Every structure is written in structure tokens, then in C-alpha cells.
Image (tube, rainbow, N blue to C red; front, side, top):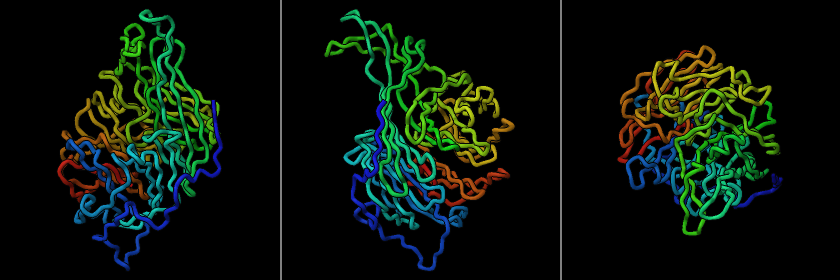
Length: 449
């Protein structure tokens, strides 16, 4: 295992007075008398070639809490918002108070470049600190989160080539491991503070069957501040079936739908040393998620982690618990969304833990529709909300749900169509309809911060 401490990784140019792009939009300006304590930022993804693909870039626009809950207010992120630097859909994060927006550019010439912005309101976002280049450590498309206050962690998981014995054409599968790269970012004074690289593999029995980790994501730091948890996605090669490529090497069949027990990588923090894998005995779902946070520190100090991608008929998405004392799965605990709602084959797209054992989940059923429910992790119960167009909604690219005070904010729009911000009281569960979200053909709203 290799780790490096980087004290001054300011691999960019400070740009404290710049906006997102070289050409600031001035069609929306602040009222000089407007005094807003907390800005709420809405994000939208633009179509590139196919309706809803989200690959045409990302725009953002900030509003007040008063505007967010007002159904007579219209948000026009695609007309009036500011473009975020990213050749595809930006991977945005924000500070808990909404004052800062963070982005690591996803692919392209500037892929892997970290930027921090001060949220100034409406379409004004002021660059703050240095650009930080992460590409050499975690690629031009890293997965990352605000893992703790003032700390970002970005990761990359790369499956190594299959190790074989024997000679062509009689190759014998031996194992497949995964190279894991991690960096930590100082979000207050943008710079890389630590890097680490190591290989991980599953149990000997699973390795022999062809299982390996193909992707990692959603890193967070525990309440004690001494461990980091990284979600993992698992796939399987068929050890007995391969073809020979033009280089004379074997390419083993990929059985991507095969699953092993859910896993999480645990490392010491902040050193990123002593990596180990922990396993749940409750589900063979994935813990890496797609584009949003999937694990949170609960009020009780334990980590609650959603899973997704369970095979059809295997009970749908779960919420697991990692014990704060042991830093291992508490296999005496599991929350089943299927059981709580009386449905089959749920798939949690994203969720938000909002305190006191309560969470709000956005999910589909058997790959179809888009639904919202409030879950109680203590009583293991759930309440589904009725929202328009739910049978045809698609929340696949949803990146974030906002919590401000007791209000939970979720953006709900069909692709190409207008929708609304929906506001939920985290304590009572009451739902109200907030600001209108004005859409454009092919585009979609994907987050609120």
C-alpha cells in the first residue's frame, strides 16, 4: 500500500473573483435590498444527443427559502442559470449551510479539476481559492463526496486484469483484484492533503468464483473521525468461459447481473491506511450508488447505508447499518423498503437522512416510475407520497436532496416537462408544493442544495 502526504497541492491558479464561465450572465441580478440568510441552489442537466441523457452540461440557479416554498415563483435554471464547468453532467456538492458549491469536472479536457464557488444568489457564483487538479490521482472522472465538514474525498476503483496460469489456449482463471485510489481535499483552502493507493479483493471463495469490485463511490468519514467508508459495486467474471483477443490474451465472460454480498471498504482516516472489506449478510445489492450520497451518519452515531441493484425477486433495496463502535456491519439490523411499503423490487435512486431515524427516499419499482417515501428507520415503517406523473417519472440522475431547518426539498420534473420543488416537513411528514420548475425539451432537473 502506498500513501503520500501532500501539504501544498495547489495545482491550479487562484481565481477568487471569477464566475463559473468566462462570460457571466447578467440577465438576472440581485436586488440591492435583498437580504438572504440561506440560498438554495437548484441544478439542471441539459440534453446532448438523446432526450434526458443529461450529457450536455449542467446549469445552476439559487433562490431564497421564501421563493423555494412559494408555488407562484418560477425557477428557470435553463434560461437564467449559470453553466457549471463540465463536459458532461457536473458532479456537484455543497456545504451544509448552502454558502459554497463544489464541483469536480467530469471527463473532457478539464476532467478531474476541482472548483469551489461562493453562492452569491440567483445566477451569481464566485470562484473561491485555487483550482485543484485531481486527474493524476483519481482520473478525469472521479467519484466524490463532501465526506465530513470541510473535507472532500474522491475515489477511483479500477479492476485489474485477470490473473491466469497456464498458456494459450489453456488459460486457467486465478483471481481478479481492484486498484483503489483515494485523495482527500481541504475544502476550506482548496488543496489535496493526502493520497493513497492499494489493491483489494474479495474472499478466496468469491475470487475463485470470479467476483471482483468494479466500482467504488460515496466515501464518508464516521462520527469519531477515525474511519472512512467507501461503497462498492461487485461484478463477476465467468472463470470457465473466455475468448482470446488479438493480443493473444484471454478475455473472460462478464456476468454483470451476478451479485455477491454487499461490501464496504473501510480505511483509517485521515491516513487511508489499513484497508479492509466488511460484508453484509442481508443483501447482495450494491453500495456505491450512482450519482448521489447513499450513506449518512445517523443521530445515534451509526452509519445508515442504502443499497440498490438487487436482482429481481431478492427483496429490493435495503438500508443497512454500520456500527459506530465496531466499524463493521450490524447484521442484526436491516430495513427493507419492499417490506415497509408492501411492494416488490424497489430500487432506491437516492435518499436523505434528516435526523432522529427519519429519511426521505426516492425510488423506482422494478426499474419503472419515480416515487418518494418517508422512512422511519427505528420503527422500520414507511409512508409513500402521491405526486403527479409518478408512473412515468425518472429520477435516475438525481444528485441531491436538500435539508434546511425542518424542510426537506426535492425537485420533481418529468424529462422535458415543467414540475415543482416539493417541500416535506421532516418531523410531521407534511408535503406541500413549492416553486415551479420551468423546463426545456430534453432537459431535466437533477438536484437541490
